[in-house]
Length: 140
Image (cartoon, rainbow, N blue to C red; front, side, top):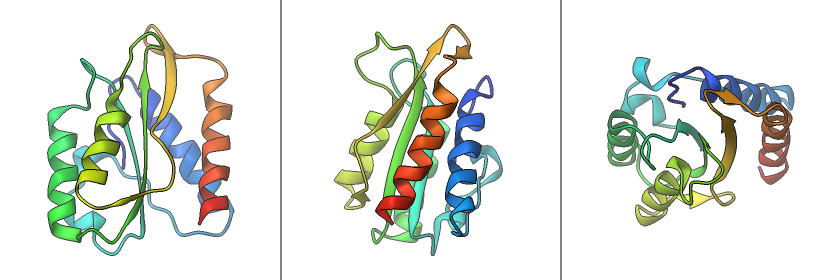
């Protein structure tokens, strides 16, 4: 599940999903704006990607994730990633990670950050997304 403002977080989410899918796992990559809490039910692993807006995810995405925990329960693993400027100390993935841990979900790894230059991803970030997908597969 991803939220995206300029399309960068979506691009990374699709790369991560393709890597996981390429290893034989069933994957659905969904935009949060076309999704609801019911889309989380029965999903073993949640991979959540969000742009960082004022140090956090956008309100609607946070609300969707909070409601998903209520709807789907706590028996899920998760990975949270974001896009952000490198000089920011925290990003939206940190907030999502903390929220889900507080609610009893299991992190596969610490929050992951992908860096921006202006409105564009840095050139090496797509390869880092591929690496993230492969790492997730190795932890399943």
